[in-house]
Image (cartoon, rainbow, N blue to C red; front, side, top):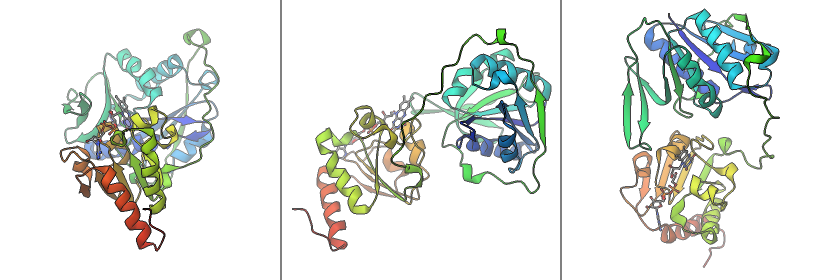
Length: 333
Ligand code: FAD
């Protein structure tokens, strides 16, 4: 067994942007092991997507097509990948830790007598896979059994842990190989429903140069305009942590973190946000982070370039006024 195989996701005819992060992780692991990295894409009519992938630095792109893979099912993916992994015998199989992967990858690993090392945040020398326990309070190091073994090591990578823009392009396009999957209707025990369609987005946080993000420190919905005013003064987009979006105070499409968007603006201003790991993974790649939090030990200060350990209800209006003043605009009283 050798090499790294990355399972790439797609949706509505396009590669999932976050899957490119798992490819970046695959390239990095392959480099560390002085081995090669390949990618596999499953579905029906995925040839154009395979050809997109061949533009990345990969040993090979496998396109596994079958009419029964036209829509995702856990059984379809598990059975197809079982055949593929048995045939290709990679030493490592990587995925991005998406809802889809959570659905089928543990079953796939089990079919090889393995566990899934899930939601990995870093790959260190060894390789050692780092994942977090107790909501980020502890880091655990996982070292798989020394290679070669009889079964591959299955690993899912946390969104935001690797940067898609670090993905190396191919000097010459990677060869594409079509793989025949042996799949029968009676092997699929579920009937997929039509895909959930998200309502049209009004904002794309991933391209916003400045983001002002609000957390539970804001206390109540009536105080949100205070932070909105700061965002407006900056010409920034408003974003929020999960409790704020869960409460409906800020729309869900503005959520930053592992359940929301991964952003990397020039400036991220975190207001009353503690800095839980699920939030940090969504914004840690921002160029400059400013945090306002009254608790000087809040974890957000560990990733902040500038920190204001103070009451946001004093700082935010003063900052808004200072910005408006600097712009020559009327200052709120
Ligand atoms: P809190 O943790 O309650 O922090 C509020 C902060 O405000 C505190 O640090 C406090 O000191 C400060 N504060 C209070 N009053 C003031 C004041 N007057 N002035 C200044 N500071 C003040 N969270 C996300 O954000 N995004 C995600 O995508 C996400 N996904 C998750 C996925 C899973 C599977 C799980 C289990 C959790 C997820 N979470 C996510 C939730 C996450 O664990 C935290 O609970 C959440 O980020 C906390 O939000 P917060 O920082 O706004 O609130």
